[in-house]
Length: 104
Image 1 (cartoon, rainbow, N blue to C red):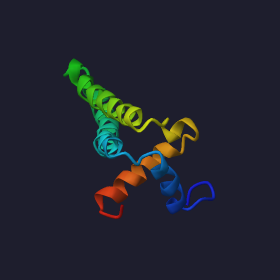
Image 2 (tube, rainbow, N blue to C red; image 1 turned 30 degrees about the vertical axis):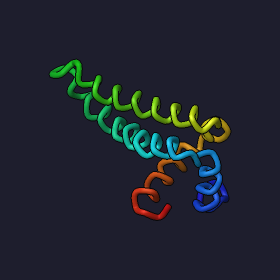
Image 3 (tube, one colour; image 1 turned 60 degrees about the vertical axis):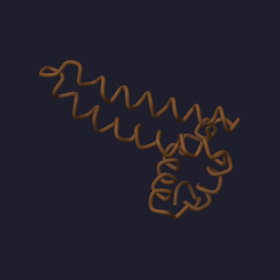
Image 4 (tube, one colour; image 1 turned 90 degrees about the horizontal axis):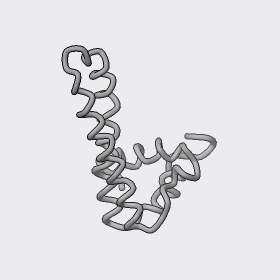
């Protein structure tokens, strides 16, 4: 439950703007790249003295993930849902998790 709505309600709304197969593929690849980049940033921060260029890896993953997201929405012809409500950033991750588990 998130903000008084069930996860099923959030996912249903999310799927309305994620119907095109190219957009779905872009999100299937882009979401994990973004998620993976975040802990890598945290790991790179204390190591920046030993490996100053280490932050480039999570930056590249983060940017590639977002490029895929926006490219997918360009193909879909719809704005990302998080432009309407920031909570869709969490819903996108939940959608990806359900998709990987074969529930979508």
